[in-house]
Image (tube, rainbow, N blue to C red; front, side, top):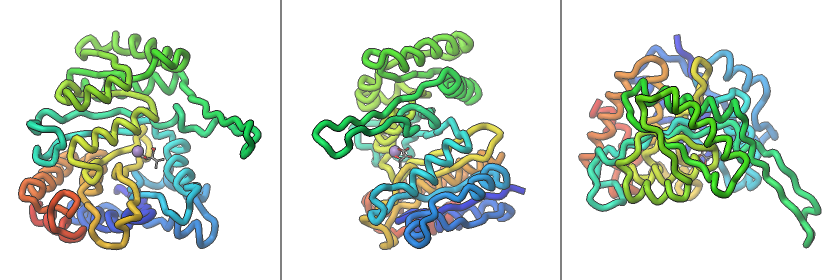
Length: 344
Ligand code: IPM
Ligand code: MN
């Protein structure tokens, strides 16, 4: 039986995970969950960010982790988020950050005259290296002569496995196109590696159209012609940035779901949004990103039909305007979940 580790985390993470669990238990009463008290409160209480034994248990005793959000103004260094979220991505070696971007109701798209079918692509964001490893250093900190360096790590293995994952997923899911995005015109070492590996892997997938865009052009094209994209594969930082752009295209960060994956290993699922301290505790956060994330989790556990059902139920609510305030509705977090449960 599947077991899920649950980390609500900070701010609205607690509110949306409560809702996500209601829906998870309704759709899959057999799935066991175990709650983990990790986040800013815990850190402020006893200094714990991410205990090593919990990390080990995540990797060995659970099918997946469901995470809410991390970030709290009382922890300006964000050290707990770094240890818990980036720590899990790195130590569990979750090299795929899978971020679908699908418009469920055209009225929430900020672009004019767009049909739902125009926005339906998936981003494969590299999730274990790039500019996120913390490799670098500071020298003469706080002086007029200070130097700060952040090294971008691109390994042959890391680049190849994310590019392969993107092509394999495209083929398995009937998608025709994979676009790789880098900045090889300015970053001549690491991104040259991306170019070469992309060409090699693309040659193994003659049935998939392979294209390349520099990331600045990709940002522009995603706004001008989102219908051109099926699968995008890119590095950690660029993937972070363009998936927020993608979230906006699908109706806002309150609707964006994600999975941190390494096939065959424990995965970590989280809504793309953060802890939103400005609205935390008010009961008005949008639970839909978490519900769609729960759908992704169910598909990962071998129940893809439940993901489809859940996505349809969220879509029904979006179309009926049964949504939270930031989408123009009147519903509170719990009521929006009630609406989805009713639609189910
Ligand atoms: C995300 C977030 C994280 C990231 C932050 C919280 C470190 O923005 O999951 O997209 O940059 O990966
Ligand atoms: Mn982000």
